[in-house]
Length: 307
Image 1 (cartoon, rainbow, N blue to C red):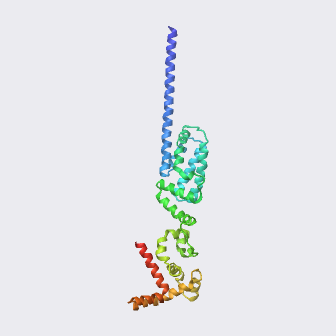
Image 2: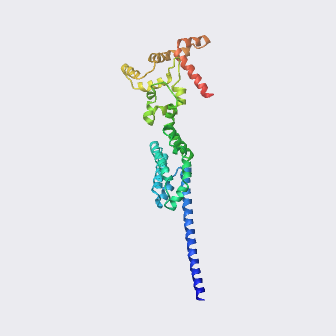
Image 3: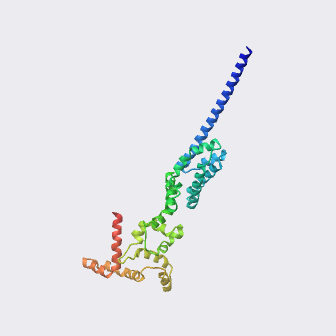
């Protein structure tokens, strides 16, 4: 009878221990589930919107492996640089992220947060795409960073970075090219005012440049472009020496451009007074070949643009 009573007490005590154990494991499971959800949301915020603040908050509130802390810090640096369009800082952060990913792949979780973070590491890697490819560098890396901004909805940033990087990439790859040597002079104002390279200015203003500034005449000189530069350089000149000095800065065919300028007013008078027949037009073409060639090229460019 006593033995039975003791057995019953032991069973009751064992049942209580089992219940506490189950509840403890249940609480732990719930904790892991909550942390897993929080990490999942933080990773998705970075993957879809380029935000690293939720990841940083998790690291701040929970003890994590130092490699994870380092990686999250690098992700934060990259996100901030991308939002501010700091290309050099983005490049530096990408290399830190690559190393951080490698380090995290070789660690063992020390906490529930570590476990949850490592669980979603593949998702994080997938969102970074070509940025993690060690063979992608220089211009290809710049294009990958622009693509990352696009996928995260950072459209203004992607446009800004494209404006800074794509022109040089196009020139280096031979998509755009020019054999002119006076581009820095041609775009002097834009280079100084906008802090851009001449390659950026050339690509950004290509339509205007082709349609107005760089209208070709017979022989290949771009009269419109040179006139624009000369106008700016000669503004304020008060004597012949200043005019001559301004002309010495350019590499174009000076004899041809001077002839063009000298012919402008007589040609205008000739058109006003004499163009009444085909014969007059033929005479004009022969007498003012530089101007006729310029007008013909300009007309063809404008027609192409309109069509």
